[in-house]
Image 1: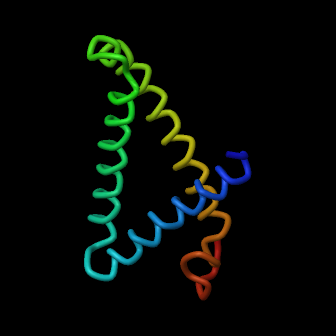
Image 2: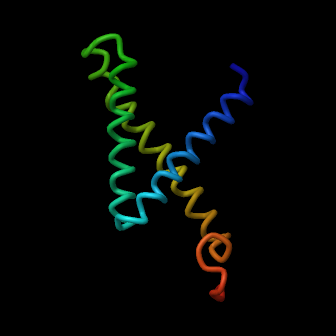
Image 3: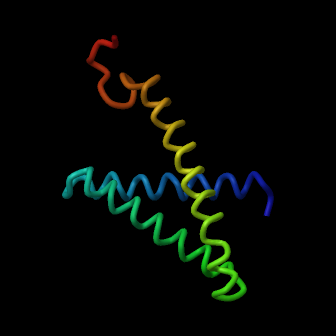
Length: 100
């Protein structure tokens, strides 16, 4: 599969997850939706690390490096998105508010 196709599939998945979360916010507090999405991502990532291991011993040896990678990557991604919302707050959230 080409990188372009993988990028398209990746962003389609991201958009699909966000759409599902936005739809859930119609019935559930966004904080609950956020916590559920974060928990689901953590659980799925733990599964991916475990399933990628040859055996339990290798899995146990990889836990700390996986934790460091995943938390570091999350920190980068949340930082990028918080900055994006800071720069585009009026567009994304409240077009009628004055910026400071």
